[in-house]
Length: 273
Image (cartoon, rainbow, N blue to C red; front, side, top):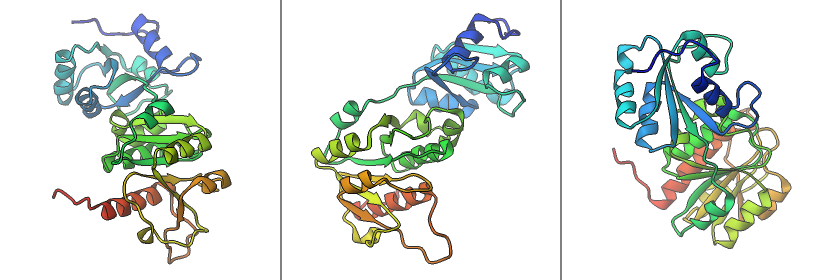
């Protein structure tokens, strides 16, 4: 049984904070998921976990995740409250009691394009600036069973705390390609016969009028400006989700969910329930 960590200067804490990009450490090499449930999900997903931290004293409800970490050979530590808050990068206490540190795995564009097949369905975001929207898009992709998602340069960091929390664990199952050029991404997909479907308030075709058979990629744009002209020019077809009230647009995550639902409907995907 390891001793309880009581100091922020403990080597394990220092290493974790550096990996998470805290204390002026620069770009993070790891991200953190919070709570005992996500520790179990990370183990199940065979995520590259480096270590886990539990707030001391451990709660009874956390025993299954603690025991699972032991069985998986994960380095698990008990940590005093003040040190735990600093691990979270916060100056205040939260309800979080378990923190799992996972190595960031960014899938380069070449890797994404290399696994494109005739069955590919991909979600991509261009210049998505709100990290919470980035996180919900990852969650939306996961909900439809998509294994990968791409974000162009100018998008928020998919591995920031706000984004990771918004994924509610989906970041553990979906490979993220980020920081790529719009033209490089869309041309690469089209060269592999992927039909690229863009979204625009100025488009005339409704989603149910647009062919969304696989392989396809649905591309959503910046929250306030939509897709760039460059992106629109590289799409095979543009679609607009009809609106009947006074709002001028849908949130980008809502739009992505509706378009993926329509794609699934056309592709004959049915609920298992």
